[in-house]
Every structure is written in C-alpha cells, then in structure tokens.
Image (tube, rainbow, N blue to C red; front, top):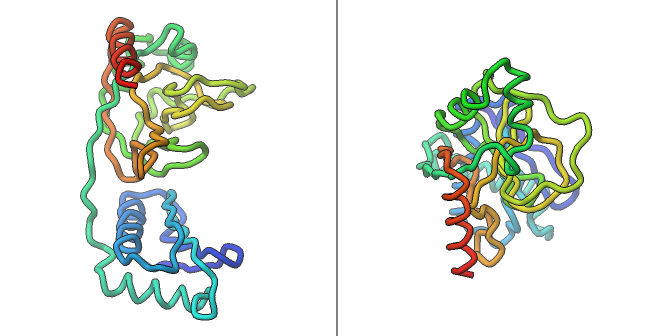
Length: 232
C-alpha cells in the first residue's frame, strides 16, 4: 500500500495510508507507528496514530525539515518491513449496564426495536478493536460494533459525562476516561480506570488493542470501586 506524506504546519508530517478504515489500513497504521517509535530518533517528539494516518511531530532543524523528515521516514519504513503484523493485546473491560450508569440504554433499545437485555447481550458478545485514541486523554474510538445496536449521537450533548461511562455513537462504541462534555448515548459504566496520569503511558488502551466487554452487576461495580479507592 502506498503511503502519502504531507506537512502539518512546520513541525509535523502526516503519513496517510488510505481514505477508508479497513483491516489492512489499521494494521498498517499500527506497524508504521511501531517502526517509527522503535527507531528512537532524537528529532521525533511524538508519534500519533489515527484511523488511517500517523502524524509525526519533530524538532525543526537545518537537517530536519519536511523533505528531510519524509526521506528519513521512508528509509526507516522500507528497511523495517512496515507490512509486518503487530502483536495485539486483548483487554477485558467490565461494564455495569443501564440504570444511573447507562441512562440512554433504553433509548438505544427502542431505537433499534430491541429489548434492553438484547442490547446488553449484543454489546458484550463481540470482540472489538481500538482504532485510535483521541478527543480526550485516553479516549478510545472502538470499532467492530454490531449495526444492530447502532444509535445516533444525542441532539443536545451533555455538559458533563461521568468518567468511565460507556457510550455508543453511530457504529462505534467508546469509554469516556475522564469527566467531559459529550454527545454519545450512554449505556453503562466501567469501574476500570482508562486514564492513568501517573504512568509513563497514561492511557490503559492503545490503538490496535482488542476489547471484550463483560457485564457486571451493581454490587460487583461497587465492590470494584471500593477496592480501587482502597488502593489509592
């Protein structure tokens, strides 16, 4: 697959692998990210993977301007078999569905002419993939959700969504790692922390991770939170 290079301001370069989200493009994005990070170039400040692009922020010097960085990246990717598949983790995320934790669960059910139980069963039966991290610190855009439970964003976004809320927007699902405004339909909440500000890598999830959602009860949710707070 061809890679298109384009400048993003004076200090970044965007590597685009396609226009559509496909298995091939997501694998290529992960592979490109891994190769560049492993190269440990002093001039590279940050590498940010997205749906079909990888953005590389770099220090601008006489030897590192757009064409120089493009040539350097091209050489690195050609030398390191960019098409090689990157190993992926599988992470289980517990979710307490409905009630105060998922105020929009009934809307998602009625929108799709399903019962609440059917929505929970469908949402928790698949294996998902994190396409990218963005919007808010540690926020995962997760693909692979069944179209049977797809739902539009809210017409009026909420000003405050509790941290760790699990939502649906269109054909995607995701988890709000921190309290933030947002317009996704909230179907549940996880007691698991996704944003880890004290860690070297502050996001529990990374692009390319596989995700499995596991339904838990209100009691299990409360016990998990109690253990987490006790550890803090």
